[in-house]
Length: 252
Ligand SMILES: Nc1ncnc2c1ncn2[C@@H]1O[C@H](COP(=O)(O)OP(=O)(O)O)[C@@H](O)[C@H]1O
Ligand SMILES: [Mg+2]
Image (cartoon, rainbow, N blue to C red; front, side, top):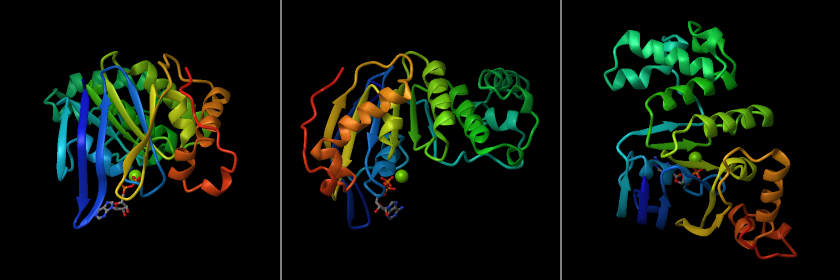
């Protein structure tokens, strides 16, 4: 098990954000946590990555963890190839070797022509690809993604989700949080819904293994099914729109 969380509670000061979360992400699977803005997704992700200590519960995670956030968090004074290789630098890999590996990874991600560019010269989608390259290069056993593609258009998002699927090693566990159900439905093996104050898991919905990203029409079909479920509607404060509730059956 690459990530196992049991009975996780977390708080900022006196305000409890997570109210007892059980979540497991086995190696080789992508679990997407969805919920509205402010529901505690980033807090959960920080606990998963070991960046925030829970107030109660147990976390067991792999020691090689990479994170990708909504903003790419590149260093503006480093060229693209050195940004991508930054994780390797932290692991003690020498300059020549990390440049070689970074250049190869960037080429696979379609950035072979901009190795020596500065981050400011790239589009948003390209910067996010550099952030992905930086994460993949450390060969993480646990990858945590905090809404990494939310700011991108649907075509770019699909392309990067496809890269995510194809570049991942078969035993890496991925925990992705997003408010975008269709994004979750494109790649996740399981969708987990976070809701309440403090937040708990109100629904865990298995989708079956997606070896390829699901096509947009399929992902939106899954999203439509999910939105028809009372727990999902509630998680996004859409109860009023979900008049004729169809309880969700596990779909495979
Ligand atoms: N560092 C912090 N200090 C105090 N409150 C915070 C902090 N980070 C987040 N919060 C609050 O915790 C709640 C959950 O935040 P967050 O986990 O970022 O939600 P999400 O990622 O789902 O939007 C929000 O109400 C937010 O305002
Ligand atoms: Mg967040």
